[in-house]
Amino acid sequence: MNYFNDLIFVNHGNAKYTACQARKRLFEGYYGIQFHYYGKVRAWVNDSPPESVDTPHVFITWPGVEFNYGAPEGTVRHQAHVCFRGPRVDRYLREGLLELRDRNLFLPIHDPERFLQTMLHLFSLLETPGATSHARAVLLLEELLIQLREQPALPPRTRTLYGGQLRQLRDKLAEAPEKAWSFEQEAAAMSLSYVHFRRLFQQFTGLPPGQFLLECRLRRAETLLTSGTLRIGEIALACGFESEFHFSRIFKRHRTLSPSAFRERYGTF
Image (cartoon, rainbow, N blue to C red):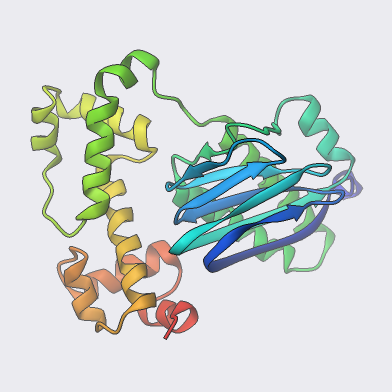
């Protein structure tokens, strides 16, 4: 397994952060994948203009520059990260697998659940000693980098024609995920077939409409679980789930914790 010893994992983590003023961070001698899968983030490199995003995204950190990032006041963000160094990273850079940006920092993640589960699997391997676990962790790191390279982009003409309507719909879904949305009706309102609408929506947001709505409901549930005192059944109905049982089953499938365990771990009261 010496083939994989040219990469060293420096640190990793998966945590929830309350709002904090953006602060300076230096990554001396190592690189990192910073995955923000929930919440708003503001970030910039050195003296570049600040950039903001409120959808699942990654930005890459590297040595020799000053990174500043944090969450707006009154918000919460969830972040997973993995940092690494070694000669293998030079190959990633040389062959274009790892791209360093000091502008347009944020890389959208079109399948955040898949990306997060890959990271969590990688973390479990890092916490298991042995050369085989390390080798598999390196392969999963490369899988993450490949997922980043595979992110599709919305064609310019499509963005011009439908970008505004898709953005409005995306925002409405996030604001009112509890509603009984009909995506067939939304497609008809845009004079599109449902198949075409679904493809454009996925290109724009990274997820098919149904999965995007589910993610909005789960995020609303996370907020209510961590910042309020509603019972689990009340939260289920407030987020558009048909029952407490259905909500608990879906939440655990997508967040790895039951709603009550999530509240116990991340609650602020």
